View 1 (cartoon, helix red, strand yellow):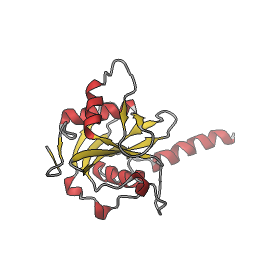
View 2 (spheres, rainbow, N blue to C red):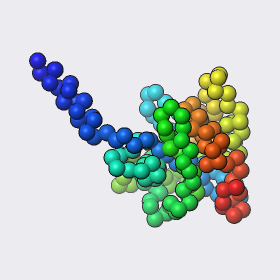
View 3 (spheres, helix red, strand yellow):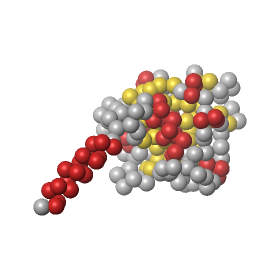
View 4 (cartoon, helix red, strand yellow):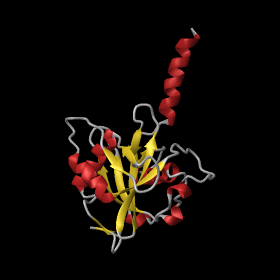
Length: 196
């Protein structure tokens, strides 16, 4: 008899604490030595176990842009704080089909992976591995991606381990949509550090 009362209570608690706002994230880039590099993180969730942009679920009352920035901060191990991020430069969103994931692009200061991985006071840390990949390598992989084959793309890294990272297929679909929407341009002009 107790089980019957526990199940509705559990569903009620989940309904009260969950948010109806969409998940969101950031494809962050830094300009280093005249080229754009993207920060990616390993997602250890059993259904993903691959590399992707930094993002996740919304908290109650957040806009998609607020979710994207909070998730980026948390998933970068709080290496990036609000004072280092120029939110006026947040570009997007590109909204994926299916689960309406809101993806934004944003230039951030370059930080070595070792610096990102340093121990900090940070809540909800979900990632522990980061890499930087070249924009050109990411675009090359995106252009080779065939959704019908469902093959996992890999991209070489310029900093961090491993030397080659497999990308999460749903994340690739979000990135391709962001390219089509102009949120993630095929070319990033690092001479002026502006998207072009």
